[in-house]
Image (cartoon, rainbow, N blue to C red; front, side, top):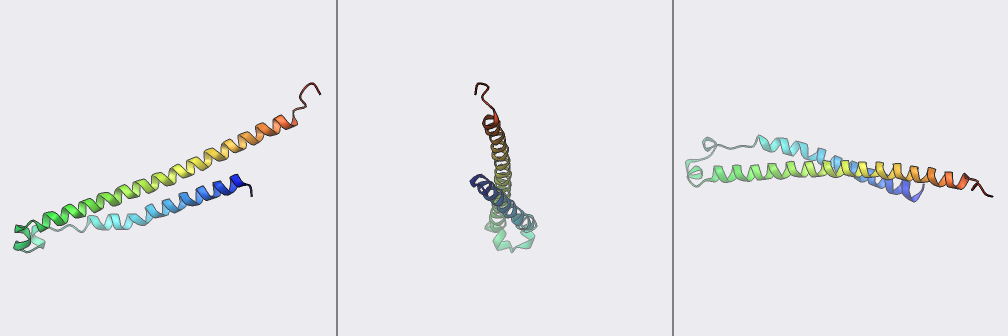
Length: 109
């Protein structure tokens, strides 16, 4: 294996790890959406003190953070895959260019 192929393999492995991390957040992200509480779910005392509002604000903030993390992880994965593909294509093009220079008889030899 060449240094480039090792680096490309590492990039693709990292991309897979980020995609897996994003997939692992899908469950908690969807579960938190169903954890709403209304005033009817709490005591009058808790409603009077705004506990229902505080709880739901915190739940929404956590849901938003999970959604943002999922999007960021997927973006990292896609970017790493795209970078690996670009590096691989450029390396292949450079290899062909070097081979054509090497096999060129120079015209004046």
